[in-house]
Length: 507
Image (cartoon, rainbow, N blue to C red; front, side, top):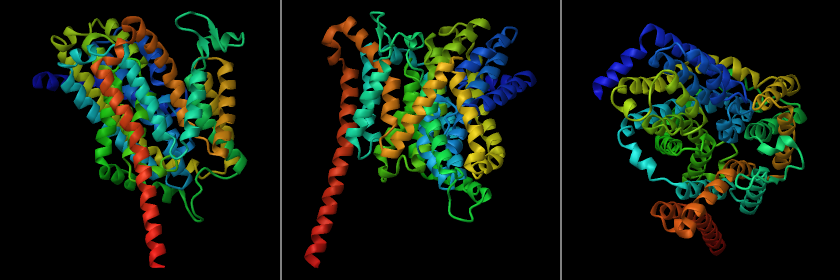
């Protein structure tokens, strides 16, 4: 395997594959910054260009482009509150509040460096797991997938902070929104109001762009101030000086980087769950383990680190079942599966034996492309950070154009722009009255998955699926995820009461 790994690296550094990888990185960099396009869509658009390429050349181009979109998508999330990718939504929660405090450089340093480390972790797991992953993935059936989606929903508790009731109400609202469209089992219409657009449900991209990016832009327009609201005398240079601090934050919280990368890789392995689920699960786990969970959503650097580390790790994770036996872990890897067939490769035994050098070349590309993208991102941080100090009324038209572009390109429908506007209004109301937006979004993402897997679980096993070992193990984790924050808050209240009693006695 070592000789095949070296062979794969040598092939990547050949002139043509290296040039194609750099071209892919450049395209992915731009696509990641522009909201709404997405890595999977860009892969599909670039796929026809690979027909006459050799396998290593094709994957250098496609993978170099795909993995970079997740990294650069975090830049607009941090600076403008506009997710460059649907999978960058969790980065907005703490990255953009840090920018408002004048700490945009620190947030960008943390998210970019943690993304690079997450890419290394994911690639390492991919290299080690390829020979043994088949029996692990095959152990998962619809009941286990349903349990994983419910595990994601239990993080509503962690993500709601002190507003548990509000969090559950928003999650219930999100589940209702997830029901919009055609019933996947019966084919009947649900909450479509005789509108053809709603037959496919409400798109996640315009919803994310409006709920987070649109709400922040409307807030900026109403405030008539710049995005960065630091102390008087703050400058873009002062904000950018925090990049080194962000890198040091990542090194200080290295266990968080490893844990978030592991979550990203693990969720990426499971087909169908997607990057949004991975980010919110890592974000919720980071909040539960934090010593200051109340800071999450207000500009906690731990939330930024967790969101960044999970991004690239989940891409490597989704490649594991794709390479191992042809089951794509997500939309992007499904497009890559088409590329396998175009260049004449068969996933499974061939990728693990006779074409093992090609497989290792893919692993090297995921690491090299991310480091090139992160290095390039650091060079453009200064002009991008300066934008956050421009007066809001001058910046809003540009941001509104980005929002409209991001919403429209999701499915080339003006109805998506209307959804984005409505979501933006809902987001402003949530901000104004302190209602959590994340439980709503997480419920929308997981609602359709939970419904499908529950139907399949009952159809295949009736209620016997509740006794499956993996389901029981995940259920135990769910209970701990719910009980843990409650116990911590109870202990905190007890300590406060004890301190108050001691002060009364001393007085």
